[in-house]
Image (tube, rainbow, N blue to C red):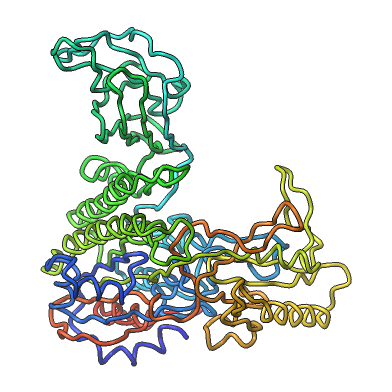
Length: 599
């Protein structure tokens, strides 16, 4: 289904006014039913999502496409088309006809039908993107005139505990106005690398004149010895550095956030977190520089280091997530003041990031205890409150134009993983070889392979395998489907909620060559793993990499949210609104002609 066929259906829902400006904000991972419950329970303020529900058109659920994955849902929201039309069936998928093991990053892939931002540009309207999934800024079809790119940095973060040896006296002159009542001590955390931005060193001070040697603060210096920040135990700090050039960009501001988690007064134990080195990637250059000045530098996603290795620092994780959310709001304010756009498409990953790690609600989930569940539920409430504050900030734009809130999916708890590719290997349907970096990789002559993502798997037959005819390929696909359909979980229940050949997947919107030959949707509580196990006797069932998951088939608990606030918009609450109708509603408000033709 493409958008042109949806416009008639949505015309009755949108009051057609003269073309106006609009913002579309996606709150990744925000489930409609969960949000409604939290609003009813009084967990959120009256100024955010509750205001959007009071003042405009909204739905209890945004019915998302299958599978409920970020790239898939955003492609359909952006086009009004199902995955079988966009060709984007998973966050990473095997493109039809490619060699085994080949995966395409769906966040950088081009939709096979025209997108909302392309249609707006074709009709003379400018679009701005603030990290909207699908607008990667990589190519002509995935680029906007004003844009902030969502990116992951190559610099690793550090969670350091030390020192291994007693700190030495610092050979540094303290800045004017900075005193220490004990000898300043040098703390070396990283190897010196003056060529890398924000290679930091640290000095511990005793700032209290009480006759005791008790260190209570650190100073943060760059490679040239310039003081960048100060921090006490429990405090965050930001260090910044400007460089003349980076990757072809001039005048680039870098940032690095850190937190002093613990500082023993005698320096016997120090715990320090150092985040990734980041920068803004935005276009045009004047927009990037204005972001640097007024919004700050891309602070990076919340770090799983706070929740791994026996370390469960939920507070620091949520503080990072909330900082990321505030950055996106400030970036919107910069773009709002700039004003050279008709449609702005923005992104808020906060809820998704939090639910993946904090959705610990079922005793069957690994690590579940009542105490940990209560702690994680409190962290989720804080994340939801931060998202609600962001919603309140965006709603201030309602005085200037329309405000649309959507989300791509909700989440549900997972308590086991299933090594699907390993299961197919043990049946002889996947052939592996030794990888260059160790471990097993799919062999070029493998009869089949599978692309897995959370709650769904796409199995494809390698028609270039030796002796593989079309008849034998169809027979192999039937055998694989029968095998997966027969599998049971440890309790004896069906492992998959649905296994179907791709030519029968039209009802799920997945009848496309990019879906492979067999589509397998897992049952509640189980996620697919693409790992190959080291030993043939290892159990196929294991532990999921996070407690919160999505990417399954139709499920009201996985549906998203929809709100529309604007002049002349009827105040109405409906049970459900389809994700594939969002683009049509926006198009009508902006006065766009029908679009969504194949590209």
